Image (cartoon, rainbow, N blue to C red):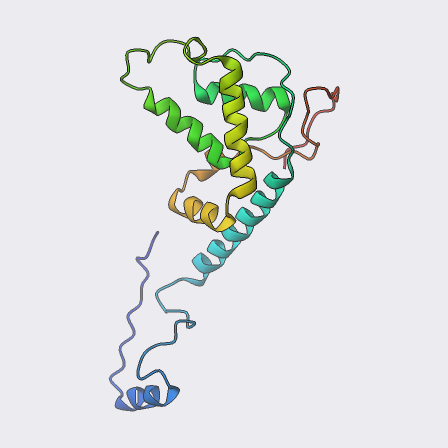
Length: 183
């Protein structure tokens, strides 16, 4: 975060310190006061990010987890499986699920089976069920405050947030063919 525009305020007026003793804080600054070195722009963008995280989590909670699988999905990586699931069911995966899948792929680096297709190591049905189980946990139990804090710490967080569409998500037995509108 750019804090290069910080301003130090130094008061040499003794009367300023006398007035502080009367506020009931014994010379301490109230924690509700905004400090001069925190730009207002950053405080409002942080608030905006928390609000977006709250709206995102509420939206994700409303998406149904498919109960019936439509077919066996071949895959070579966890991220690849996640992308196939998104296409097949026409619904996004949670930010935390996308991060999880990326981390699982990274765990394979340096193993003797690193270059083998993952579906030869983990049965595709078990792998898909695992992704949906993790997705359900993330959708139903994640706190938007935690999401916002993660997003604040990662300037590239948006890479792992799938586009949200106005259409309702596709279930395996639905036959909708309308194209989704991306928000």
